[in-house]
Image (cartoon, rainbow, N blue to C red; front, side, top):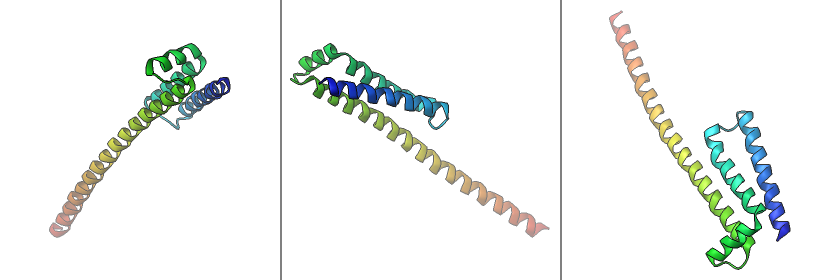
Length: 120
């Protein structure tokens, strides 16, 4: 169990460092990094607190505390991925609306240009 907890703690520290470096280099925006940092910190706290894992395992009726850790990690990252999916969906909708507005503006510009050529 200690090997799994140590590996999970190392993984969470690596994720925290990766996210912070990505924010610093502007590869990821701060508002999107918050959910990743929250998940990584939660993972770190759970992997370092064996008594908390045992209490959660008892509460959930699971005999193996590392299984609780893996279950919670899976749930956390599913929530993060859901948030990322919703952001991507919003961006896609905004991109479609922007492309439609641009097409309308191009049409008006072309119509105005044709009108000035007919007059001149």
